Image (cartoon, rainbow, N blue to C red; front, side):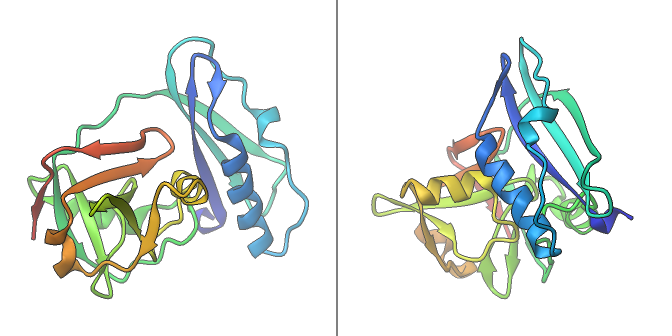
Length: 196
């Protein structure tokens, strides 16, 4: 049952596994939310390729936490130049393996590269990344994202971004946008085009 399956996407570059402690923390948090307080050490499952950039996908299920599936996929960065604004009350608070709801929203992008999800009038995330918006020398990230990504959590902890409720009508007040996820870290997109 895919609703009880979850995954982590972890960056691996030339044999180095990035930010694993943050992925371990989220994995443990998901298990805790189901009343499970014994964990695997995720590092023991990752036999990283020695050369190249990979997206490590680590899948686990609540029914059998001993069984963790790990795959490696060569990573090619997707170019994002335009975002279609879509409105929805989607609930994707954990990194579920089943992404049907997100995929359905992504299909609404039309001729854009990705979507920008608005929930209850507030900006949240794209289909694959948290975001940060730049204003007056400060990078702000939406206070209530669809998913609290590991990169977002790390950058909040490092005080590089600040949480803020951002209404869709305030989008024009920000001069830059950055995408945040495990593979691209903090990726500033120049001259992003928003389509309403």
